[in-house]
Every structure is written in structure tokens, then in C-alpha cells.
Amino acid sequence: MSHEHGADPSPADCADFLERIVYFLDNELDEGDCSAVRLHLDSCNPCLEKYDLQRTVKAVVARSCAESAPDDLRQRVMLRIREVQVQIRETP
Image (cartoon, rainbow, N blue to C red; front, side):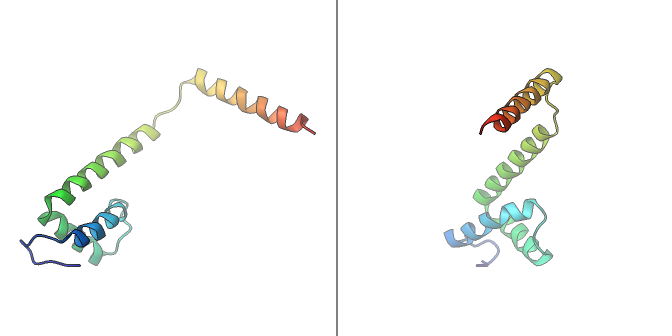
């Protein structure tokens, strides 16, 4: 799985590290695995580009999830939920 610094990583190396990037971004790897991922990203431009893309997508999604829906939309959604709840209760 590991490769010499400066040597081209094999496709299997990259596949393994690309699977771990998600966990790396979420800080779910132990320090040894984090070091291995960092070392791989330092020596593999294609994986680094994919890492940057994943990081950017994660940041955009996080920012989007922090926004509140406008009050009129929230009220319409809540009204529709109540209507569906009433219909479910009235169905035999």
C-alpha cells in the first residue's frame, strides 16, 4: 500500500487512499492513518485534486445546511405537513 517518496503510486494505492479521504476530511482516522494520507497527498497530484474537490463540496454543503428557509416557505411546508397528518388520521 505504501510507496517510496517520489515514486509513482499504483492505482491500488490511490484507490485505497481515495476511500480514506472521506474519513480524513471528517477527522475519523487515527494519527498513523492521517500521516499516511498526508504523505500520499503530498506525492500524488491526482489524489490531491480529488481531495481538494471533496473538501470544497463538503464546505459548500455545510454552508448550505446552515442557511434557514424563508419564513413563508417554512409556513407552507408546516401547513402541508399538518394536512398530510390529518389525511393519515382520517384514512380508515
